[in-house]
Length: 280
Image (cartoon, rainbow, N blue to C red; front, side):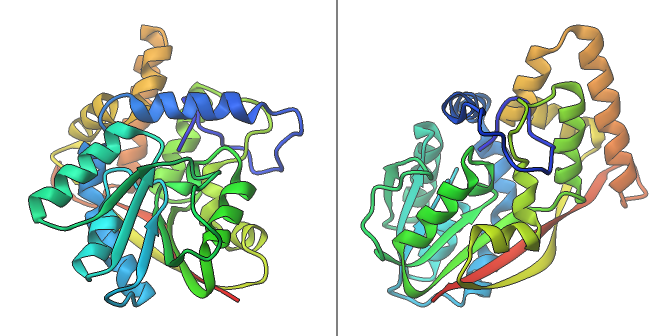
């Protein structure tokens, strides 16, 4: 998850960073608004990640920072034994409602990605779509995913890249609301070099993909994200009206740089890495 001010620096985290405080701000950001409104539009990413992982019926799957359950539901549709976790109970409730509506039997558990309450090697597959990349302590979260994955099992990730639309959204927000010094950028998870650091002694396949944001207009996207996407909502709330107007102009301009619709609607590809990691 993210802080209200999203980190954009690419260097190592300072030893003086208060990760507990960062996590508290993150949890507050993701508990605000209603991420499920945005998250539900990303469902296709969970489906394609499950295909990339070649999940099999009956496998034990853990979804870390599951949000409203996109990849959890995708795995359940493939008859896996799924546990969805998040540290925002309201988001797990939305995932539970979706599962009940589709009559899939999933397990839900409130849990911190940096301290997963499961034994070593408990799962065949561990997944996260645009979730674990926002943890405060990146090394610890990655180590926890490896720990609970059995030897020979797989870890599947979908992570926004620094140069894609959402990566540039983080950068734009950071210009208006600078992150705490030393906090690592979540977009680092969208780079092969950082993945190699986070997941040593594993085999990593990282494939660039695009998710396309489709909205009625740039203004429609801004209204949705400002209302429901916690980090954007919190950033606007922390700014005075003139600064809010400046951020709004920059976000509309950013959409203009990426928009390929040609007709006034918003059709914006956002690059992410589809990652399949095999634990040795």
